[in-house]
Length: 507
Image (cartoon, rainbow, N blue to C red; front, side, top):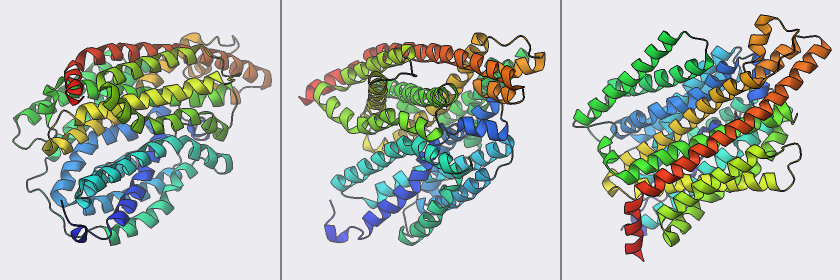
């Protein structure tokens, strides 16, 4: 315990600076969800391109968070954070003025690179700046709140910007923020900091990223049905081989990048699976809803953002609620019940008519946001509660990787599944040529693009067919999501048995 005199005087300013740095990174996770329809039409992007535009960000982040965290420990958080801020600002400007889907995907790659430098440094700096445990808990609480709130207002900010400006504004908004934050961090952050000696294994980092991207690309290509089967199998096999090699290197290395020995705890495995599934379900449901609200119900991006407020607002409250309930009733019960209730909410939403939402649909959305967020926090409690303080950093990077991976996989699987259900459900007008029929049956976005090229009545008929098919698709998707989450609840109930005895010991 340090006396207050020896604590750094500007520590709360440091907290404000790093939280401002963190905000755009979190906003970028969800700001694009409501922009998808506008973006698809403006850039004439195919369904697969749209998935990559949204998805490349969380996927690359998942691969980069751990390597960048270890690099920051070697070189110093301040340096890596400043480089990350500049990269993020430049990438935002590139994304805003992208002329084609490929350019936008490249800009998102650069954004992920910047974001993955910012995220671990923020936590590292909070850990180093706040020596006092009480203050640190408060600082981390504020950090968590900014994280939840940022992800929550993403769709709203995106919708409000699209109401008045072109789609690039959802990226351009980051530039003025970075112009304020980067100089503030430069001035406020301590110039001298302890670093850990040792070399940085760039080969391991590249293996991890290559393995993830190949594996996910294989899933997308496989369901998209555009690539021949041997190529898909080859890509997936290469992906799995790279990931296996990465794991073997981690287990043999004296200084591994990811401490895989942590996975010997059943509670950590349960926590990781919860993190991946809950964040994936949240991202996938938001993406499905944003498209349903705009394409089928004809809402503006802002109206879609407002419709989704219950999910976001409730998700922001979930964290503190989960902490309180876990202390009171034990983690196992809270985690299992929250997952079961969210599965129930998904089944209800799958059957609901969004044309006439009444009171029940927003209520179900709020329940879903709250319970999934409780599930996410429970995963954090399970992971962090199973390790010694000395391994907190390694466990934290493992957990953050789980979130990003969940978001990326959630968008991939929902998107790919959505496209395959949609193409089976749509009843195309017979007058369409083979090529146009193929394009229109991929996704509802493609159906709208094709309809805009057709004469009046034909176009209108195609849009009606697309809307009917998407309503069916959304019901199938949400029901399937509910089944997965219910299965997860059963897994969690049986894996977290060791936690029951712990919670008893506390009473």
